[in-house]
Length: 237
Image (cartoon, rainbow, N blue to C red; front, top):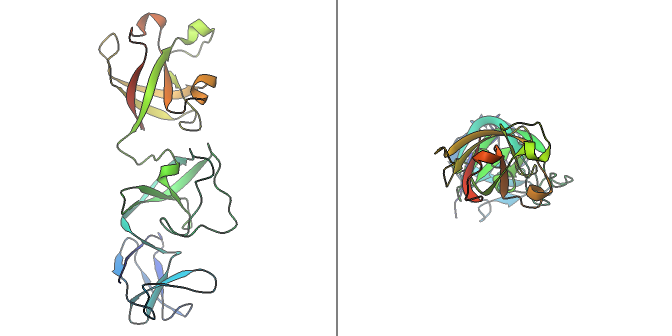
């Protein structure tokens, strides 16, 4: 059975004349190739565990530079935040082998990414550099244009004795770290009819820390809507 592999290394994929042989050319980033059988199998692992694919006569590539089941890969830069404990492992390729000797990335840690790949299941994957991929499902998934659904409550910082003002929002900082700019689209309008707010995360607390899918929006007490609790879709800007 043939596979489709995509060059997901930003530097292209080295093409070898045999498994662990000599490099004969470089296949360009983003290009896709149909694989051919290797001794009756659609791929083959060498003694180091590296997976090899045959993409033509005397043309072999490996899974440190190509990935299976990828719809698209795009050069994009940004910052991704880890949100799930013990799951965000680094992989050689999109949904591929785990990189040996590396612990799962810590919740709340932030990483610069250079490429985004959309896999066959429409999930984002992020290259943290040098073909070290992490699945977007275990992050804040900044390239997810569908946004994140959250529960919304409101509070007045001044009532709590704070001078932080009303430009911020309190969140679980493992989900939305301090300094993150959010666009918040409320299901229910505020008293003045507003449904969309632009806020920067500047606060947290035990309440939202134990409720990761809830945010607490700062408003003057007189402006807090009578419904008290609503829901919203949040986009990272």
